[in-house]
Length: 475
Ligand SMILES: [Zn+2]
Image (cartoon, rainbow, N blue to C red; front, side, top):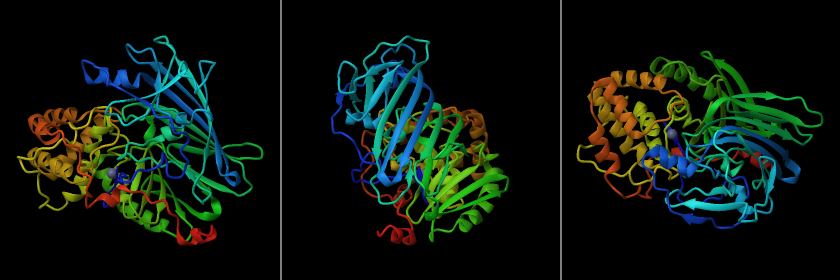
């Protein structure tokens, strides 16, 4: 969900590694398996995701001079209704040998198909790790994993690099489920083994810890959130500027590249934007405020209580704190609506912003299965015009904003689908968009054109640090 003026999700057509700053281990190809048949959407999601995450705990030991990160994690979960064989999403499992796995205290051999099988459901685009054990319903189970990541870029930083347009979340770092409706409390511990001082910001409550001979922080989301919305960023203190300020009642931390984008400009934008959003949509929904990692160019990516973004995309990313990070789509394909609402809010300030033509047809939602990762970038253009058509019928921009405030407060952390959005519109205003949504969003089988949207820049995070920092590293 990057956009610029608004926006930013990130999407480029070029194939990218699992995470731009992290080496991809292994090459074992997963087996492709048919999508399970299910009577309804929840049944399909249960059959493909199988587990209900309870907690995700991860410890990252960062060794900057060795360019590596040792990762240990414990993921606790219950089985979903009718399911017994667990699945997690975990990119490093493709590497096999470097990964150690333990389920409920039993060591598993990631190299053995009698313990672990890599599979990919047709249409999903997401690798799954199926553990070859039958687990009891009702009980809480615990999967522990350890592995080593190699840092590939020249700089000393280590951060999340989620790309929701491509559908890449934090499963590149630790076992989880890369699914918007799957909410879990996350507790991440960062331990930097280096004499050089570091800074750390991220989602939720980030506190420095006490540990001998190591710099430590604990990040606690304190509530259940979608795993791909968890953000963190660590960097050598000498490479960044960290500024903290209370802006209109919201605690804001800004980290920017030394000699690069100005935290003061970020605060200046927020000084008017946060009050506007509060007035339009209600109180800022992030309990611990906002952490911003400012980049030099490009777009941004929103996370729970944080964003990695350029100044240009900042307003768009902060809007996502309401729509995207706390009013949450049920599946990836449904997340067109948080982008569309975000873009609409900006674009509809121009009264001439056009509605979608009545004869429009697309497969923005319907051309993707409910388990396909990523979403259709037509959300930014045609999607915003669909929301404009809704606004027109609800009575105009002002009543539409009232509806969005109502919807945000009613469905906070209660993921919902596109047709549930139509139902909410009908319940609020009487306007019935079910048939039109079917035609506008489900009537075609073609997937988004690969061509560039004029807003494509919003979708790309460019982590390249300032020239000052690049020089420090001889880059
Ligand atoms: Zn966005």
